[in-house]
Amino acid sequence: MSSTETPTQGESPQPGARGLKARVDSYFEITKRGSTWSREFRGGIVTFVTMAYIVILNPLILGGFSADQAAVDVEGGWLPNEQVAAVTALTAGVMTILFGVIARLPYGFAAGLGINSFLAVSVVGQVTWAEAMGLVVINGLIIVLLASTGLRELIFNAIPRQLKIAITVGIGLFIAFIGLVDSGFVRASGANSPPVQLGDAGSIATLPTAVFVIGLIVIGVLLARKVKAALLIGIVATTVVAVILEAIFKVGPSLGTNPAGWNLNAPVLPTRVVALPDLGLIGQVSFGAFERIGMLAAVMLVFTLVFTNFFDAMGTMTGLASEAGLADKDGKFPRLKSALIVEGIGAVAGGATSASSNTVFIESGAGIGEGARTGVANVITGILFLAAMFFTPLTQIVPLEVAAAALVIVGALMVAQIRHLDFTEFSSTLPIFLTIIVMPLTYSIANGIGAGFISWVLVRSFSGKGREISPLLWVVAVGFVLFFVRGPVEALIGGGAD
Image 1 (cartoon, helix red, strand yellow):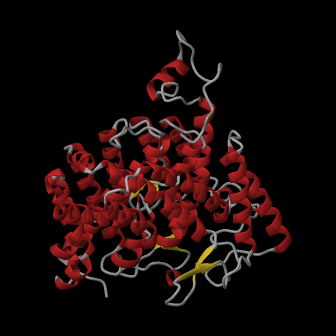
Image 2: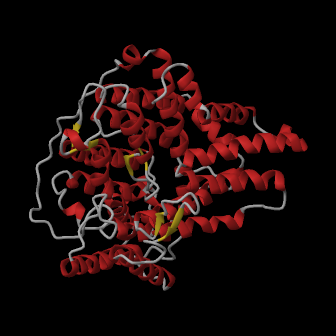
């Protein structure tokens, strides 16, 4: 557990306490998990702060301010930016609260970045946006079915403990890499070798990246000194610095053309605070994709969505449970089945609102690092997302570079789980290594899990340890083989993208 704070008198119910507060404490197991009300509130706020960028980024991926700079579907349709922002905040708020109340775990929900990019780049060139969201709904229904029948939990239980720990470590590297890239500390070099480089032309030459470094050091020192609310204090303090520096130097956002600018949003005080949400995208769903592109092509798209959604979420939940100290020696955590079912509902809800599939966010690790251990933190995060529908200008104050510093810190906390891995036997060392390294290098949790599964069953089997492998793990490994070669398969059946 990342925090050493212990419950104190006045923060948690004493034996024999009565009333609403005591019942809520008992239901969410706040005291039982060694948490406090103040930790949960701080954790919920920090999770929202590190996730709030999705209200800005998701509309830029799925929508636009005009047709000429939006992802246009096969019929020329596009999603207005302000409408996507509204449904993004709404769905994230509702699903985060729902997950917190039912699963009672501190995992924030929002539109998954992998799936929304897949929809915008690969799917809407073949179908309409309504039909694409129909495929997302079908994907969610399949996941709910797999979870409610217990099959998803069986797959989870079939994963060896060493691979579960490797998934946690891999996610730690992945989330740190996301932070380093979002901050501009690591950038594409534009060359074949090396593909990435330090900052701009090999040096830290931009103000936003310098702010990231400041935030990283400030939060790191606060955590090292065991300061309560270290992440929240660090984020707020660095944001204030960013606002002051932007007011002085007027760097502005990058907008894809200014490499020295802020990656997503410039930290400036908004001219207006309140904006009424436009929820016109709710219910804009069609299941006509099967008729438009054919059954096989549509099935392959659904297959890709299910595999990505299924294993990204499973891997994220595993990593967060380990970081929160809620997982047992086999990697299981409380109310696993409920968590898996609600996660599937998030995909259905995301499709129904045109926000894209909603899933567990690895940024929840920031709230866990602040001390969150229960669903109370989720309720706080969810309420803030619902408020964000009306206060979207305020969500743009915290620059992505500041949130990125928190992500790198959380990544460091999660990578610490590597101490529990056994590298003495190479038949497990190679799958463990591939699981860890493939995640950040391919920017995908599912890819890392797939590489680990396939190499585990093959290397362990040919090393004489095949009897130790669950038959279900073999089935999943074969599924991942199909997942990895889906491009040629889609092209073969005429459903691949140009």
